Amino acid sequence: MRRGITPKIIMAVYLVVLMLPIYWLIKMSLQTNATIMSGLTLWPAHPTLEKYRDIFNDPTWIHAFGVSLAYVAINTVISVTVALPAAYAFNRYSFVGDKHLFFWLLTNLMAPTAVFAMPFFNLYYALGLFDTVWAVALAQCLFNVPLAVWILEGFVGGVPKEIDETAAIDGYSFPRFFIRLFLPLIANGIGVTAFFCFMFSWVEQLLATTLTSSNALPFVAVMTRSYSASGMDWSLLAAAGVLTMVPGAIFIWFVRNHIAKGFALGRV
Amino acid sequence: MNGKTWNNRAWFFVLPVLCFVLFSAVLPVMTVVNYSVQDTMGANSFFWNGDAWFRDLLDPNSDAGVRFSGALVRTFAFSITAVSLEVVLGIAIALCLPRKGWSVGASLIVIALPMLIPWNVVGTIWQIFSRSDIGLFGAALTGMGLNYNVTQEPVSAWVTIVVLDVWHWTPLVILLSYAGLQAIPDAYYQAARIDGASRWSVFKNVELPKLHKVLVIAILLRFMQSFMIYAEPVVVTGGGPGNATTFLSIDLVKIAIGEVDVGRGAAMSLIYYLIILTVCYVFYTIMTQLERRRDG
Image 1 (cartoon, each protein chain N blue to C red):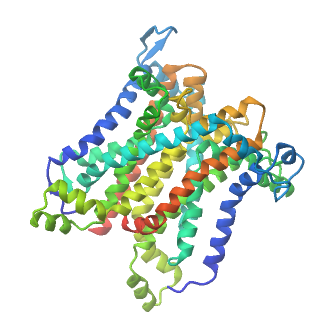
Image 2: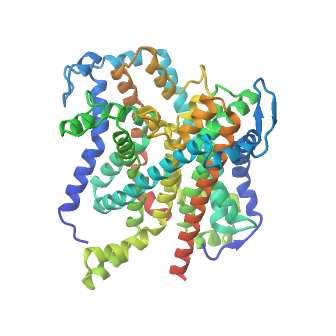
Image 3: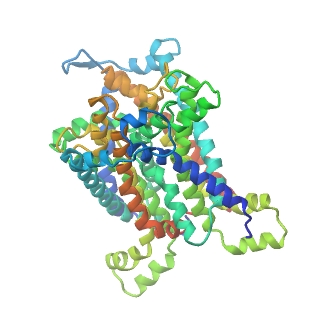
């Protein structure tokens, strides 16, 4: 299709509007509180990296960042691993109760996390996992496992059934077929799913803060603490906020081709 | 979905997922059910309370009922407004995205960025951005002579939360719609061009039908999540001014954790859960029926 100049303009305007709040956060993180309060400027007056230096020199922040990355990684690995066979089963086979089971899995995406905070606290406390990265990683499976099944099911559907049949005729055992042939075929799908699991685990705050107290305090919780500690330290808050975007930005960079290609292969 | 093999051994494939979900969803839900039918005198002494919590919440004349239905109406109004804006804007932007070249990757990365920011940080961003002394958005609106003040004016608070959600989540609709558009073979467009179809009829007859499936996903996901919105309004408005932005989840946390009213909180969360479930089930069924009718 021939495309005029209008879409490009709309696109450019949208991207600018999208970036404005983020730019504003970055701008504030480069200012001191005194210059923030002294007046509104479009560019940071007297930019300084002071707040970033404060954060990097404080072991609490560093540790919290590591904790957040740890539970996100554990959660992503678990979710994708258990979801793979299930997604295959839902796409390729009919079995007793399959449709109901699938919808029931999705209902877990609808469960408000606020509802689960209290029971989870009791559960993980009883198991002795409270205040570890495992508690957060397992609790977040509540929504990430069903989400992974849902996304992967679409990608499995993008692989023609004939491939399964040909492999069986060629004498591949099922596990060998699944790992050697099938997984590489849906590699893009796995990338996209991992991206979504990463995303929802990284951005979630309620469970992550409820299930930790001191040893495994996630980054967002340390941020919440710095709220009340000494009034409003706007620029410290902004600097910490900017840092929370870094892992996400890096992750998208790695899967960017998978996302462009992968989305097209998925459930469309 | 057609031509599937009937094989009950597929249950073994689903088993790991089932174990996880039983552990992380069914157990807690049973705890909630347990709380919802009991009252407590404190110090772990619980007694049977039957359906009293539920009747109280659903009674339009009781204080709890008025509070609950107020929050419910606000949540629905918010979800419907935000999701409709996101879907329309999302499709429009997806149509404007370039199809080839380096700019695709670059645009997608920028577009996905807001989704990767922790939700309370999103709240912080907009809390700063909407202040009229240090935020660009707030300063611009006050500069235009509007009576804009998030902590004082219900309308301002409301608009800010909707704008925040649209900013935050339109990217999801864009990514999904873009994926749908990518899957349309070039031949369809060529055929449309030969027929001399207008831009609008290409959209209506070629693009929209192909977007059907991804849009169902997008709307379901967005409805569920916007109906549960919590961290962002808590940071930006704290549910105020008054209770203008006290949505169900905020009220729930206030009751269950703030006021330690566990029984009422549990009953409320079950009703809340059932509402989301019903809406999504109805929507999902209608959409799959429509699709089946079109395909068959």
